[in-house]
Amino acid sequence: MGAPLKNIKACVFDAYGTLFDVSAAARRCSIELGERWLDFSAMWRKKQLEYTWLRTLMGDFKDFWHVTGDALDFTMDTYNIHDPALRTRLMELYLKLDTYPEVPKLLENLRDRGMKTVILSNGSRTMLTSAVRKAGIGHLLDDVFSVDEIEKFKIHPDVYQHAVDKLGVAKEKIAFQSANAWDAAGAMAFGLQVVWVNRFAQKKEKLGVINEPKHEIRSLDQFIGLLESS
Image 1: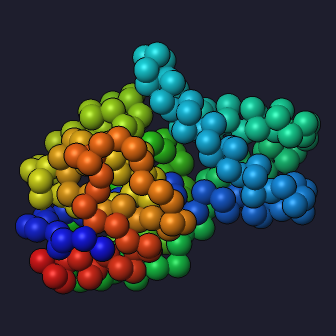
Image 2: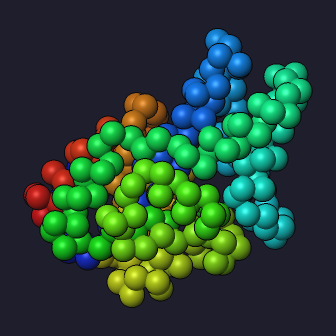
């Protein structure tokens, strides 16, 4: 798990893959998609992320809902699926992704401790509002920050700075949790205290030791242990 977190004043969580299960939409359409649904979901996610990076580099921002639709269209084309009704259902389901089971209890624990809890996400404001409402966790969050407000996607440093500015908390006193290794590396490079929630036992990114998170856990139910040791 790594050394304990020190002097934390706020806990900032990535949304997709960290709090919300990005495979949930395709899983609910597994009958229509068949045995390939998991590979389909993985490609959809991969293209979604690629398009955020490309759009940031090109300076051509479109919100995450638009990007998610473009990535789905690419994936459906790749799998030779031409079903407008299925596309509509998959997009609707993306607004109602399941949370991982440990999430509500963790947020309740942090709130009981008086800790600030917020989301910092690539998600559009509409997408995040819908996901938080469906999960019933809005009362456990102090705020939800969307990149819509700065029109750049992670891992641009301005995204992490946006959270610092909105919270009014020094970056070294913020614990940032993400299940995405690339996001964890970006937050680490920016200077946050980063916890990589390595849910699927992935290998570390090869971006240099300075960008490797010092804290690694398998699920968010291990997060409190880092705070309790501090």
